[in-house]
Image (cartoon, rainbow, N blue to C red; front, side, top):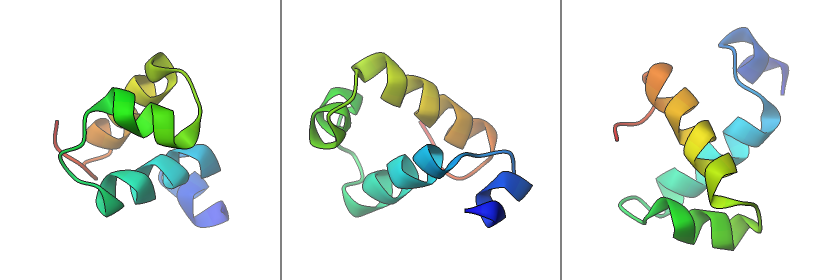
Length: 57
């Protein structure tokens, strides 16, 4: 995922980004459930995606 590194995001960030694009409008806790990670992890990742201008909160 070197392309994501170029914009300061990790492979996990890319995974969450694809999940958010697949299911827009779904609450963070539901994305966390789908990806089997803590809600705080998804929230922090979404914050990075927002800061990168890839999604809106």
